[in-house]
Length: 111
Image (cartoon, rainbow, N blue to C red; front, side):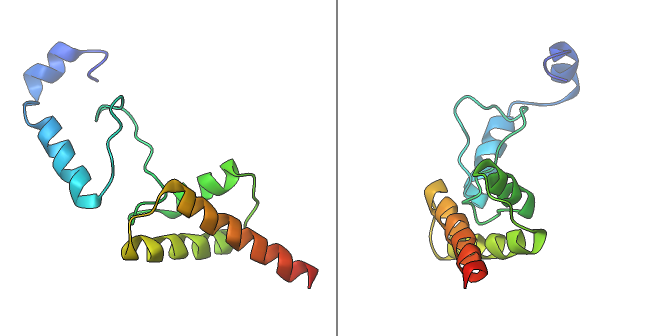
């Protein structure tokens, strides 16, 4: 909407506080705002956030080349959320949890 008709958007909405609201919400949910990603653009939420969702974890699992069932992805999501409640996580931490879960599954199959 902003890209196709900026005049309409500016006339219809009071956008002066938008950046402040975006920063406030991001601080409340502990999500960083990429410098090159304004609020009107679809945003990738890090899977290391305590607000991590199942879809974000599933997407990351596929990016890493693993094939987990929906139930297994739910288990991984719960582990990431649990760790995110204890301390802030880096993406590498979440990737390690996914890798460790996948490794455990393969070891169970071999045994």
